[in-house]
Image 1: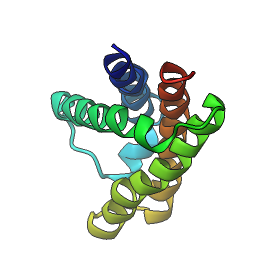
Image 2: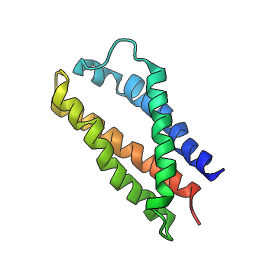
Image 3: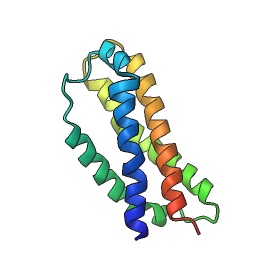
Length: 129
């Protein structure tokens, strides 16, 4: 049950966060970057999040089992935030055409940081104690 709750702790907040961040709140900024397709394939993004959630729910208790669940969550955010940034921000900035690499990196770095702090704390809360 904890495993399923940890997967949900990742996917349930991340899907709306990613949707509103990329397709609503900062949509005009991303439109100016000329990076995204006109009609994103939402199920691909959701499937990606589910796969990530399964991995993180499996890995979390093996890697972050200290007595302080908040520190465990922040440690998760630090470790996997850097790893996530290395494959979600850097290679995209390196390979794809966009009007501003700096603008893209700023937006996506903020998103990745928020993503992993929120989900890290929630997963840690599920596995606390």
